[in-house]
Amino acid sequence: MVPIKDYPHRYALTGELHARPFPALNAPSTAVFLSVKQPHDAAARDKSLDLAHLSQLLEHYGAPLPDPAATHYYGEMGKYWLKWEQHTEFVTYTVFLEGVSDRAFDPGAFEVFPDYWLEAAPGGRITSALLRLMPMPHDEGAIADHLSDWFVPESLAVASVLDRAAVVASDFRIDSAGHLRIAVFVDPSTGSRRTGRIVQRLCEIETYKSASMLGFEMVRGMGPQLSLLDAKLTDLMAQMRGSSALAEDTLHALLDISVELETLAVKSAFRFGATGAYQAIVNQRIQVLREERFMGRQGFGEFMMRRYEPAMRTVASTDTRLQSMSARAIRASELLRTRVDVERSAQNQAILASMDKRADLQLRLQHTVEGLSVVAISYYAVSLVGYLAYPLVEVFGVSKGMLTAMITLPVVAGVWWSLRRLRKKIG
Image (spheres, rainbow, N blue to C red):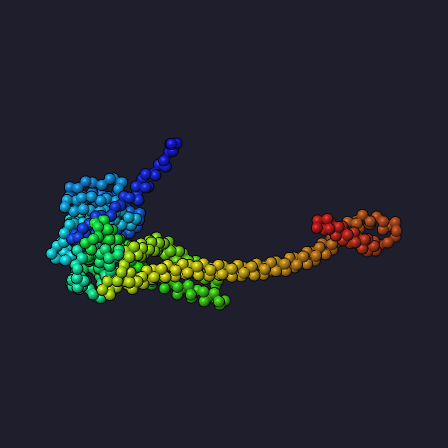
């Protein structure tokens, strides 16, 4: 066998697939679930605070502490078993206890988390739930009696899951103690591992449902601002059709709107992405339960379709609206920028025409000046030539005036010819 070097993280990555085992549960049992999230920028939080908070709880019960780099923990904690998981935005605590209290969904079960420990939590509760696991009665009427006592009928969701391995029920309402209630009636033939998987899936459905609803909360806050920006954008685009508004002023206003829309898009990008991911997990977890209708009641999937999916569609439509408005603002800015460029080109053409006209006037003026220059230079040249020719007056017997008249035309012609030749050489 030829030895081969393993990739440095091969075993760690493979181990990650098996590091979060499902709990093994038997009915009757009680599960207490808590999910904690920081209110702002939770994805970039100091995750060592999560681990320190977990260690504080384990120290309270004298349980073994987690590994310093742990992202999950499962172990015995006094008379309880604790399952802790660290996620991108939140951490979850699930405590399991054998047996159930006489009082269904007794708030006292939540006292497994000490008050001082809850007050020191690095974040706030996004959801908490009490799960009551009971052996499945032979008579469905007994289940119906329990459900009518424990839940609000109007929003109750019930389903037989995993080929009738269990019947699960919840009304997804927060009770007077601040917790969600989930009932699980387990068939006697269902193994403890399978029961643990059912409970784990139910906790995940509630966790990711609550986390995805944070996106719905965000878009409700964004609604008025988007409507205002939409109205401004529509008005500015209408102004582009007229010539009364200054194009550059309108362009600056459009750029301001584009900046606001881009700022909203950047701030909401993570939440929109996370909401879509959480919604997909909720739907996938419900799907793997393989629901069957029980006693004619709506199942978890039908409940989510009626109550949960509209909120998620609102989030998706807001994301689409924001992207559409950003694209509209960009297109309008480009069109208006084109209009400004065209107007500037027209102004430049007018300036060039004016410059051409001015150059023509300057050329005419130059020709006029050149004519005057010929006259001026000729005047002085005639005077100089006259002084040179005055001695010839007595020789030829002509007067000075006659001599000056005789030399004037040749001198003017010579000056004109000389200046024209000089201009051709310069041109």
